[in-house]
Image 1 (spheres, helix red, strand yellow):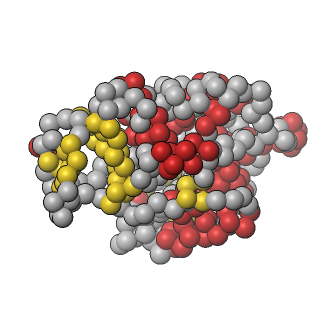
Image 2 (cartoon, rainbow, N blue to C red):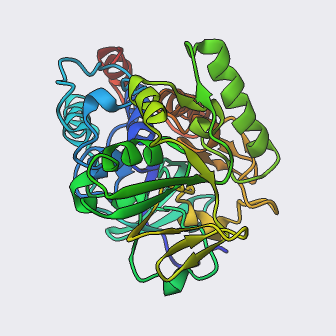
Length: 374
């Protein structure tokens, strides 16, 4: 739908999201000579720097973080492993934005992206409308926690919360807790809760896979290829982590030996006082904790009709096949800290090829690009 009569503030590129992927893209745009606020606008709905990391639970210390990859051009050094990851990475992102003059607009909510005049996209936001030639969507998944549905769920008398709402282990002291899900967050939170809870039960839809030994480049490429296959087929992407398995850390090893990580198959229904299986088995519970993952936060792109019948967005690299002006980074195969950085660079390279024929770089852009080289 073309919104007639609406022009908006004209820019070359809008970046939505200032987490790992959005900042990487903003850095490469800046390095390529796109001027902040004149050529590029970076929008983030969070109240402060840090992406989704700023919302992580306080007991997730930096030393427990798996595979945090540095942003381009600036390493994260000297971080104490016992500091909360939200503080460490939030401060790192803040320093990064300042060091490279990325000028992130926050808090700004993006409500919709629509077809606009003159082959531009109209990005409707809480601070006004931007008319852009290209869009880099880097909104991640944190805003879309996935809540599965079960018979009897509404009748449960206890507390139900998602891992995104996890307040730390002390909130579960003396409680009987059922943790649902086989991902990293579910396991980390279960291991924290078990020492203070009256009882814990772990249930997963599929048997968990524990990964022993090193995880090198070859294994990483194979995992990414599995996620890319779903994206090529137009299906909603699975996370890269979901196809790599759980790394066998010392904490996980101890959890298996102690019985905390003895997994049960997924229950069939929720009762007012717990969960139950079709074979007659049941477990009493005060709290159901859903570590059931997230979905891509892309509802604002719905007016562009990018989704395939299978529910996903088919892409060529980072570019949406249904609209070459739209790039998704941190989506599907690039939904990891290292993948997000690479995708940001690839998206900017593709965008520049298209836009270079339509605009003149500002004077001094070569010097600017040189000064930002890592």
